[in-house]
Length: 341
Image (cartoon, rainbow, N blue to C red):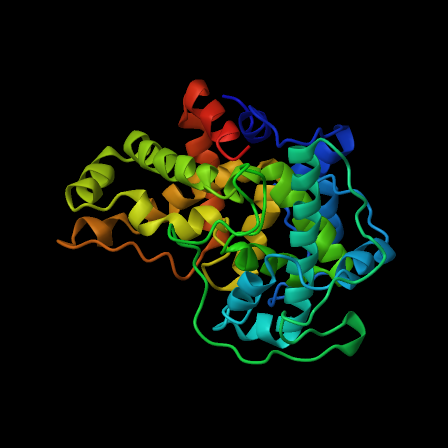
């Protein structure tokens, strides 16, 4: 029987991993990243950046993007940030709405400039040196001003009706609703906004760019794959859910889009992301199937099954996912690998 590492490495993440990184991946899987009960770890952000092969970013480069002011997606960002993980006291204690807004706005500028260069065939500088007007952008806080969240309520769970954001008609990567939740774990584990920016920007542009295109085509492909994977791995549960009209697009959109970051508690999300960054974010699809199988008795006994993924139990989910990965045919596994690119 093939080793766990060999199975999961059928299709490695988009970045190439040398021997040292292979050892790191195995360590993450078998030993975990040392952290406290609230997910605090001195090393986690650096391990994530290493696994993602994120290029070191000068703080000045991040500040240049912040100084550009409000991006074209700024209003959408401000409409999302106050909703982010509102029921999680650990997150709210550490991350302010203003800091998340700055990082997402900087991301929006970076993606906007890259999309303009792609569409127009020229490379624009990352900044113009002169901040754009904020006259119509509403309240803005510079990195030095700090500040706390204006208000927090509700939650963001990325829906099919979300706006195309800053992606544009050309289909480029841009800001879409739900990216606030995707960025939240980076904000929580990073030591600085620049570190969070570097990791998150690498993640969405290399690991799952099709999730943040205007059409969110990768998310829809992922949802279809969840249905197929469940049918393969648990035909009885799959048939029961489908007979009740419960396709993955009904219950799984947020879990696919956010890599399960929408499912509390946050420390469990961090453990799951350790695994996903080590072996590839495509495995999130199997993580969703694992959560369904973990609640199969409850779902099968219900005439109106409604999957509820809370609370996340990362170690158990990872155990199921590793087992499931051995059972997925190569052609279907390749589709998993490609769906978010």
